[in-house]
Length: 618
Ligand SMILES: Cc1ncc(C[n+]2csc(CCOP(=O)(O)OP(=O)(O)O)c2C)c(N)n1
Image (cartoon, rainbow, N blue to C red; front, side, top):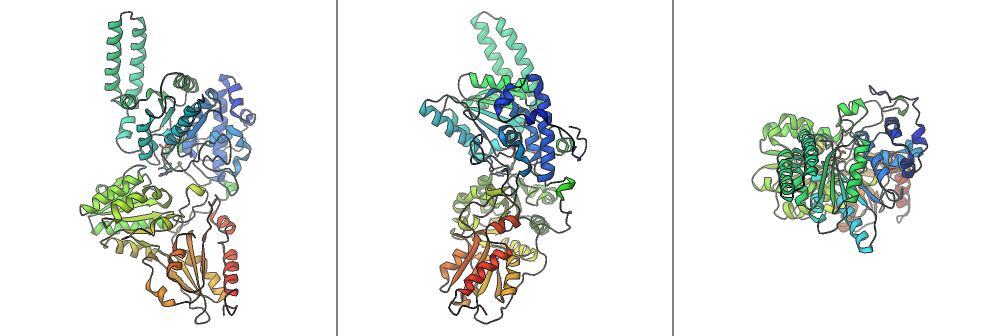
């Protein structure tokens, strides 16, 4: 592939890749053909993602690893579990999905993450970070119980390894199984640069390579030694050199009961195959530490792996929508937070590895002393905020709604129970599009509504978001503010009287007031925006027993509509996302599929209104 700029070469051919139906075909190739196959995979990956968008840089970085895994192991009898699973495009191409890759992340198409329902080669669901090792341990324990013999391999990125679930699993390895391979894919990057003590530990890759050279020389000398005392001396020397040069990196894993192999050049297929074979053949669980370059082989992605971590389509034929000047919800949130921090030095902002995604890039640049990237550690982010708040600071935690699910207990136990003034901003609340069911933020309202002391705001517009944040920063207790992906409406939220007094009222939560507006207009219904789920606005009780229709960009069960059902005596239609997982697709496709587009909503609302006593809305 010639890819010296963002242009994608349209006329490349992939003869080796085209001939591969399963990993068995990868095994059958001569070793010399593998670099060519890697190149074809990268060319195809770039071409596909240029049209579909997706997680390009992570997937480019593990092409050789994927090939080496296919060479050494027997899938699907051996079990491979990818952490997050955003790096699996090569895996998908080599396990029977290459011909369908153009449908990647599209409605009804190949998923952007592993999914067992999609392929027998996908062992577990991917999407959220940190769970691969724990799941792999489950597979290993089940194998051991049944007396099976298959290998179980987890591939975990250096950033995902720092997640609490990963660390809990690391703690469990030695008392769970004697056979497990953990591949740590170390590229020094999360979405932005990886942070924390593990990142520092892994950052010593130069010393690591130096250690490997010295170890090789010492091992050669050690082989020549005959005397036991000298051998013991060599072992002691080895461990000292190891702990000095690797600064305890391997020692930490070895103390946790895992044999350490590495660091290995993660783009050298023969070296990877040797290391994987060594990992599979020795005694006890193993960690294989590989060094890779995120974005490898595509210069723009190598140069800026954060930007290319997840990208939208850029190919001419994909007709990318022209970059809008409009402000996103995340940007609006970041801007108002900066404005608040100008006057209030007690504000502390916390992100869990999503600094750019949550609109905090500027805040981190302008107020570094008040900004914390805690890594992929959502539970920690909330408990940390609780400590800050209890000590008199004003913490604002920005998480994606779906990842905040991890931290519900911390919110209940560490924040709501002591009634601490923590502000939790839930970005991407609502459907998110192509990332699909693992990433839609549909369950926050149902999960959080029951928590005492918590107030929940759902602004409809930019002004409402700003007001909600300013107010939350003055509250004495905890507040959640949820808002969706995409552009924030600038104008006021529509409010319609309806054509007949006493007729049904649509109560639309947050930005769904803009979904409801054309329907309310065409059916002559009243439309009232609602921007707080907890407490509910007083005016709702004032509506008495009038027929109500609720609308929300959240799961219909347990959310805003359910809150209304708890207090409302009259007829009620609850509209939100159905009680099944919502697939990937554009927002428009998903709304249409679930009856939440304009036509679907109009039909359902008209049917409800038509079925009311008197049969008419007017
Ligand atoms: C629980 C959770 N929080 C946040 C994310 C968002 N996220 C996706 S990938 C990623 C970085 C992963 O870094 P690493 O594990 O090192 O893998 P790499 O992308 O570098 O291959 C983050 C933060 C997530 N998927 N899951």
